[in-house]
Image (cartoon, rainbow, N blue to C red; front, side, top):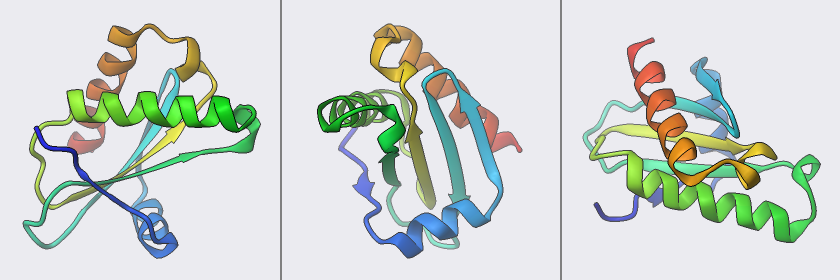
Length: 110
């Protein structure tokens, strides 16, 4: 799968947050918004300063980006926001990808 497009504008993040569809898993929180179009999957990433210094936050962001590429298939017309938590640093790779898949499935069903 190609890398999904990235949400960059604050207004896009707020629109996803306003829908109320979210699911927390170990190491991440996933929020989802269904758009009215059939455009490509868009994903935004955010990691709070509570997680650690810049190196740790960037490592969490990189791991989450790779997990999204691996686990989220072609889901047209969707916006996701992935909020990284500190546990994503030490979570085994297979478990992190599984958590993301499970969260995506749960948030789609809601």
